[in-house]
Length: 179
Image (cartoon, rainbow, N blue to C red):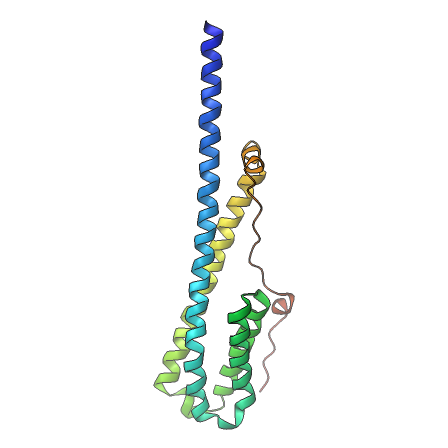
């Protein structure tokens, strides 16, 4: 009788542990999905802001049309592809746009331009924070699915490893500023 009671307690403890491990994996997976959705929301905000910025600069820098076209094209590619390479290309194009704006003192002092520039800087910082948060959640999730004994539950219920958001090799190079 005692052996049966001990066996029931051990089985009950194993079931409680399995349910707890499964639930924690689901919660982490959902946090990762939420973090990824937050990044998409920030990217959308960035995509919506860029046309206003381009139009403001266009009024001052009419002969810089190739830079403006590059920004618009990079924005469109980034919005349609959702890839990190396209996002990096967009960041570079926006940087070139700001470099062009530096050549126009009246533009640098324009209230609309300054407001748009500060909004874009805020979005970029928020986006960087969202990416860091996403990577932290992914690290915790990946750790949990790889560490024994929760790896048993992860493999039984097909919880797969998630990828980090990483920058492209071209972004790792030192920024070059040309005047």
